[in-house]
Amino acid sequence: MRALIVVAPVALVASVALAACGTATIKTDGAEKSVTDVVARQTGFHPKDVKCPSGVEAKAGKTFDCHFTGPEPKPYVAHMRVTAVNGEKVTFFVSTAPAG
Image 1 (cartoon, helix red, strand yellow):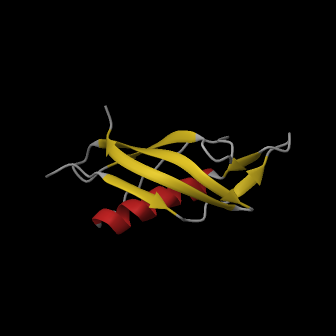
Image 2: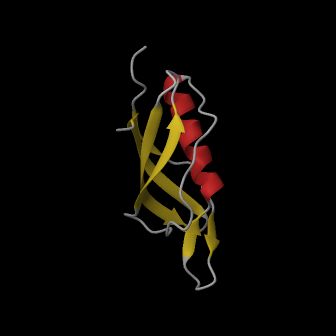
């Protein structure tokens, strides 16, 4: 089976939360849903175990990685870059590739 590779700008809603210090952070479940949605839309594969870090600042230019198991099953990484934040809506550029 060939590697599952996705490169796409994603305009999906990933809500933000305000931390105690007033800094807006990306809600982990919203980022994870964004990865699942873009991979499914681009490839037809629906990852079930996407994990993204918590505490990522909701600010354009911020980057972070999420991890999931691909269809082989092999580990994959979704490189996430925040391209815009408009209220509670966060837009990402997502690229995925096999981990390692």
